Image (cartoon, rainbow, N blue to C red):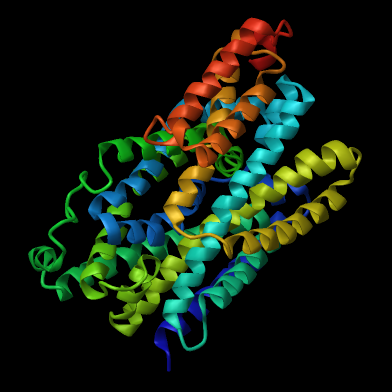
Length: 466
C-alpha cells in the first residue's frame, strides 16, 4: 500500500466534503459565491491570505531557489508577509469604504472606459500567470509522490481537476473554509518534515559540511543578496496593494477591522515559513545533488517516514490548492463582473450571473493549464508577471490618498506604459539599467501618472474618491 498516496486521497476527499457544505452557504446569490456574503471572520481572512500567499511559489518554488542559492530564498515568503501587513494597515479600510467588488470597478468609477478595459485585461493576465505556477508545482508534487503513475503532465492535469472542481462548487466560502484545513496541514507538515529531516541529516553542522563550499547555503542574505531581497519586498508589497485576488479577500470580511486584523495576523504567520521550506531545499541538495531543482523538495519528503511523507506532500499540495482556488475565483469574478455584466448583459439576473461566474472558473482554469505546460522557473516567472501590478498600485494609491492629482485618462496611460516597460525589459537588454524590472515600472508609472496630471484637464474631484 502506498501510504503517502492514500493520505493525499483522504485529503482530497476532505476538500470535496468541505466544498459540499460551502456550496450550501454560497447558494442563493452571486455575492455569497464571490464574496462569501461579506461575512468572513478574522480567522477566515487570516487563513485565506496565508492560503493564497503560501502556495507553490512559497514552498516548491522557494525550495527550488534554495537548492541553488541557499537559505536566503526564504525571504520570498517573508516579503509576502510584509506585503500583507502593509495591505492591512494601509489600504484595507479604504477599499472597504469604496464598497467595490473588483479593481477594474474602481477604475471604471473614477477613470475612463479604456482605462477600465486595460485594467481588466492586465489583472486577468497577471492572475493567470500566477495560477499556472500552481499547476506546475502541484504536478511536480504528484510526480514525486507516485512516479510510476504520474508524470509532470498528468500531475498537472490531476491538480487542475481538483482546483477547478473545488472552486466551482463553493466559491469564496469553499476557498476560505478549505483553507482552515489547508493552512493547518501545510504548517504542521512542513515544520514536522523540517525537524525530522534535520535530525536524520545529523544536524545543521553536518548538513553544512556536505554542501558545496562555493555557495553560501546557510546565509540569510548572501545567496539572493540584499538587492534581490529588497526587490522581492518591493514586488510583493506592490502586489498586495492591488492584485484582485488579495483585494477580494479583504472585501469578503464582515467589517473593516476584521479585514485589517486578518491581513496583519496572516502576514505575521508568513514571516518564518519560507525559511523552513528553504532549509528543506538545502537538505535536498545534500541528499539529491543532481536532480532537477523543482523536484528537490518532493523527493526529500518522500525519503521520510511514509506517514510523515504523506502528510507533508498533502500539505505541499494543499498550498497549491489554497492559492489556485483564490486566483481562479478572482479571475472569474473579473470576467463576469467587469466584462460580461458591464459590456455583454448589464441587466443579467443574479442566477444567470452566478452561472456565468462558475463557467468562467472552468474556462479560465483550462486556459491556465495550457499556459502551465510552457513555464519553467517558478519564482523567476512569478516576479516578472507580478511586476505589472505596479501600475495598479500607483493608480490605487493616488486615487485613495491624492485624488487631486488624478485625471480621467491617467489609469489607461499608466497601465499602457507598464506593459510597454515590461515588453522592452524582456526584448531590449540595454533597457535593463536596474536590478529588476519592478524599479523601472514604479518610476515609469509614477512619472506617467504625474505627467498626465500636468497635461490632462479632465479632473477627478476629491469628493468622488472619498
